[in-house]
Image (cartoon, rainbow, N blue to C red):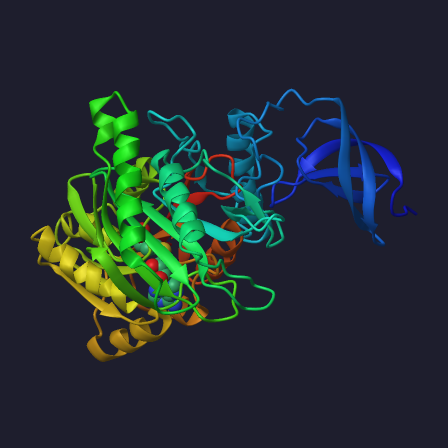
Length: 470
Ligand code: SAH
């Protein structure tokens, strides 16, 4: 048996779904954070249970061939990226294996085509890919206001001035928020006693248009000296633009400053009420040739470079000829719906967030697309009812659920509806595999899977899958 504080020599042989290294000694398993498969290490036991335990990396005796020097000053502290110690090639391999394992183990399928994972590309390589970042706000030991990210598995804030996953201009914006708070004596929110005002700064950067929306999530409804904040934020982006010699990089501008109220004791970042302090509430962006308005509470794909590739794949798998009836479920602001509508007879979109459905309706007008209809509600409630009432037989169905996957009530209707094809877009391979199991037991067959690396250095992966009726 092992005891706390034992020092062990370990060899990392595998990687867990959260990116943690796994070492085995005679069947006993140790999880060690910040290690890479192939590393030979010295580690200290932190916790030892009956069959498995947790150990802390003390020293790398012999580094794995896949180990790289992390390009981030807070790697292994910040909980945002888990794979910074791993070469990009090894990350991609890990991500491909993850979905294969889950599809086989949970989904019980093996006879399908797995396309090579679509790697991140673009001018910033695997960095600065995010168009939306949420920074928690707090105080450090000296009482100074800090912004950053939560450390993994905790809610203590790791101070970060410039996050390499998010655009450079955000460092200027965060500095402006910290200065405003210090100068105007605005408190940061403290989770422990549920006191203080500013909880998070949410920044959205529209890569295609240069628009920026800054949203302060506060434990209240008003912030003091709004005009100071507005002024500082606008100046911070001007300062960023001036620092850039390259004309193309100078096109950033804040187009909206918004307050979101969240007075709950919760881990959920956003509350459900927004108030515009300055400019417009929505941010405008483009994906391919289509334009979109996005309100602060609506979901929008985070990695614009990869989103285009993913939507093209979804469209390819939908295999539309021009007349099909298509359902786009979990449609958000109607992005996939509008791509599909250009190739289909009619698209029916369902989404649970009412603001997103308002955006979707406006976005169809914005792009002069008329063969779409959107309804707000839970897909598992709206769709069975809609199907019973109208008897409409869709030709193709697209689903893009959140991590928890599709509700079985929805899967039942998908099966019943007689749709010939299902395009399943997923951000969680375990629930994807669970749903694939159900679908393959009820008349569908998984044909092809393509994984997309939308979140380099993090363990998250997106998938687009084609299922055909048997
Ligand atoms: N397809 C869109 C959105 C995908 S994200 C895009 O590519 O942008 C998943 C979406 O599902 C979110 O917008 C979320 O609000 C929505 N959602 C979550 N639970 C839902 C449910 N039960 N029914 C319908 N939509 C839901």
